[in-house]
Image (cartoon, rainbow, N blue to C red; front, side):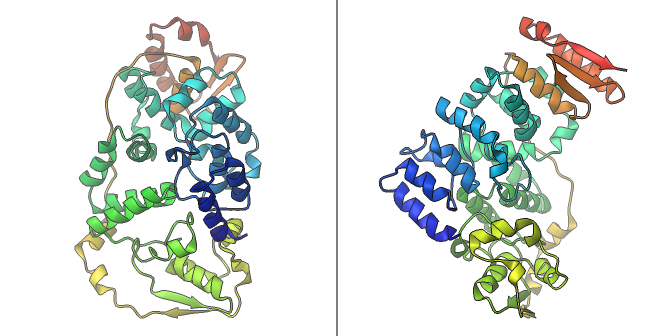
Length: 399
């Protein structure tokens, strides 16, 4: 697999004839996609954009019916796709950028299995923000389900990141979160953004800009750079994100040597001698770089003998090590519309899947869990003046 060369061919075609069939054929051989294709006017509405994005592990936005049907089709072929770092069967859903068009389609969708997958794998907590943003639920409903537990999850941040880079309406949310938090929290946020959302080069470079702006220093136990881009690109940034490595490796395979020295942290290098490293989980992703760490032979781990006292003694690094508790930012607006799909999102948002299930047009709860919370939820939902909801939902308690 020669993803770096394939990527050059892909972008040459994208910027030239822009034949979507040709682009899909190249993507199937393995490419790095620097950013979502919905920004490209020449191809953004093409049906093949969805599969190209999934193959490349890049975010995508559904803009029309053909793309929506392609998403449904691909979602039931998910065993074909293995997207870093999502080592699970629901990886396709992790790449969806929620927009109003997609929500409109979901409101009318009859495929229950697809809807349940959307709620479970896109995540009901994340969908809650968009129900609120696009005026499908009221402020009262939103804050009834915006629990303390939800405030502590990463979905607040994901919403802020997507708003900043893809919807551009509430950019102030992410700006305030970065600005108003202390050094340790800034580092935690940036680390999470790089690892989860750094597949978009604009998000990747934004994080590096913030690191430089606030003179931040972070340490890392796994990868020094996210494995979303060609190695020649990552090499430029390996020392701009985390504290420099003290170690380096030499081995017979010079391509493998270069890869490890660019990508691996000191901790990962040290784990090599114990025959423990993340390649056991990520072999096929390493292959995108034409390396096989299981073939590491005659290697030596050496010390660079760097003097990093200026970093370790800096105030920002000391504050980073100190650590604090995390607080999130929330925003406010008003709405009022209802649909059975919305009700499912709300219930799954505050109740784990082992407490609730949906079958034969009934929501079934386990009485042994969260009985008080369920009662509170019913009071909110039953006060909703909407005949569709009141007639649609039937509750059976399991005793």
